[in-house]
Amino acid sequence: MIETIYIEEEIEDHPRTGEICRRFPQARLIPCRHYGEIFNRKNQNFRLQKVQPALILAKKFKNFVLDAPAGYGIGGTCNYYFSHMLNCIYDCRYCFLQGMYRSANYVVFVNYEDFTDAIIKKINDNINCKSFFFSGYDCDSLALEPVTRFADNYLPIFRRYPDACIELRTKSTQIRSLLKIDPLPNCVIAFSFTPEEISNALEHGTPSIDKRLAAMVKLQKHGWKLGLRFDPLIYQDNYDEIYERLFNIIFSKIAAENLHSVSLGTLRFPETYFQNIIRLYPDERLFTGSFERKQGMRTYNSHIEQSMLQYCKTRLSHYVPAQILFPCEHAA
Ligand code: SF4
Image (cartoon, rainbow, N blue to C red; front, side, top):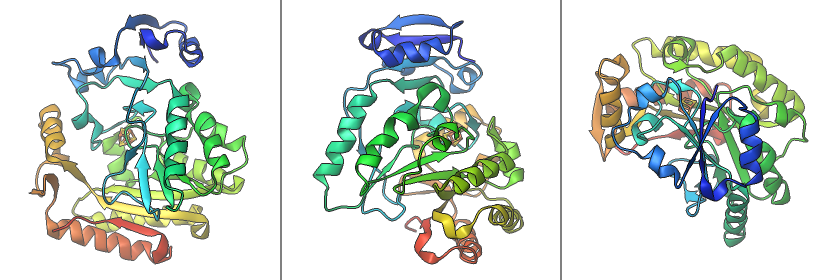
């Protein structure tokens, strides 16, 4: 439950600000000039703030749509991402956001119209390119859907521009708004998974694997295109057993022929984020052991990385064709 909402003066009267605030009638409303005053303040502790994050409603002014990082793709030639929200209501111990931001507060940029214009411009500027837009880079796309109405507001753009595609990436079961509308052939609802043992230990507050699968089954019946994301793959000695079990469970419920894409990549962090995360969780076993520095990144050592990727790719290729399998591999 949100107890405090900071509101930038600039969007105080924006209708979406009012709509969001009405969902939290008990919350303390505090005006601010710029969200950075709260979000980027020095000496904040992400870990402590995660216990009771505030919501910050803000306006974004520039950089609405950015180029996706290299290797972030599922078949498009031009890959972009945009973030209507920063941070996430879940608390996965491996999440890179905790190394990227000083604050665990949630920021929602309420000027969706400006994002919409920027997305349309990007589509029109790259008319000869198969554009893919990723929405779950700095947040979980759907976890806060009842508050943000993200899908409700952004999917109509993609209905108008069927040659451009959007991915909603999630671990949530907030699919009610998607079940009320006709599915879009150019939208992929991608669910992220780790094996149950890892999920129980590291994905705090997320719906269980069974619940995520139940949501996927409903979306599948409704006609939505689905994706599977095994990113990050997390190493432990018996990784082959636990990933094998996970794949068996998933493909006993999800029709492989209806999948749009399956992507996978091992755990990795930009070096600076890794250092920040280690400071937050110095005793966390996940970050000790077989990591090495590689081109500004912290990754598993090459042997572990390649073995895991190869194993999972081979197992997954028993279920899905190679054309929809997208491993994210690092240069050695
Ligand atoms: S669901 Fe994704 S964005 Fe949210 S905490 Fe977990 S890894 Fe981070």
